[in-house]
Image (cartoon, rainbow, N blue to C red):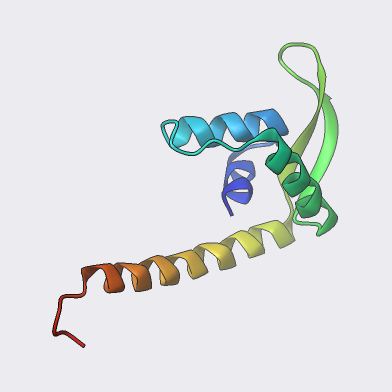
Length: 100
């Protein structure tokens, strides 16, 4: 879900995805390269991401990812599920003894 959200913001290469997640979360979340690139490939294989090789600002070639229509639909479903799960967890964490 986090990868899809970052790619939804703008076309971005893999290293950029990890940097944006780290930046947005103020260094709380750090995605390791060994986890990120397999995840990007799986999302591409599932047609949730499209990719093309482009030149970076530094002049190197990198694979840039964009969200597909199916990716946008999946991201929306994942966000809805996250909202439901986080609300349910919040209910459990706010429960007091004797309440049911």
